[in-house]
Length: 206
Image (tube, rainbow, N blue to C red; front, side, top):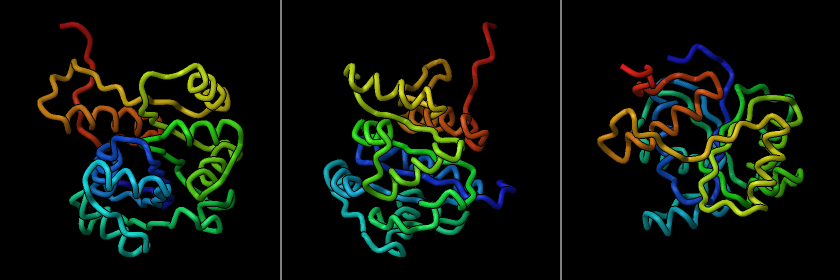
C-alpha cells in the first residue's frame, strides 16, 4: 500500500498496446497510489481501433471508464484530465509529483519531447518533469525503430529520461498475455522505485 501523498502522473499516448496502460492503472490503484491521468487525443482513436470501445471525454466519465477497464472501482485516487487542458495542475513545475510514466508512448510523443514541443497536456506535463529534473519513464511500443526514432530516444536518455521498451522476458515462465504485460509494467515502475507487482525476478542460475 502506498504511503506517499504525492501523485504519480500516468500519461497514455496513442500507441498500440493500451493493455499496458490498463494493467499499470490496475496495479497502482490496487496499491492505493494517487494517479493523475492524461490520455492524448489519439488515444481515443486507438481504443476504437483495438477494442471497438469509445472512450468518454468528460473527466468524471473517463475516470469511471478507466476504473472499469482496470477492474478497480474503489481503491486508490484517480483524477483524469482532458488532453487539451494545458492549464491543469500537472502542467506546472510547482505541482509536486512522484514523477511521470508514459505507457504506451508513441514515437510522435517521443519526437515532440526530444525537441521540447508541448502541443497538449500530456507533452507539457512530461516536459515539466524534464525541466524540473524529476523522474520521467517512457515505454515506447514500436518496431522496428528507425534511425530518427533511435536519435530521439537517445536525446531523451541523455536528459535523464528512463526508456523502457515494451519487451517482455521469458525466464519467469509466463502463462498468459497478462503475465507478459505485467513484467513490462513492473520493470517500468521499478524506474520510479515503485514495487507493487509480484513478478518473479531473476534469481541467478540454480
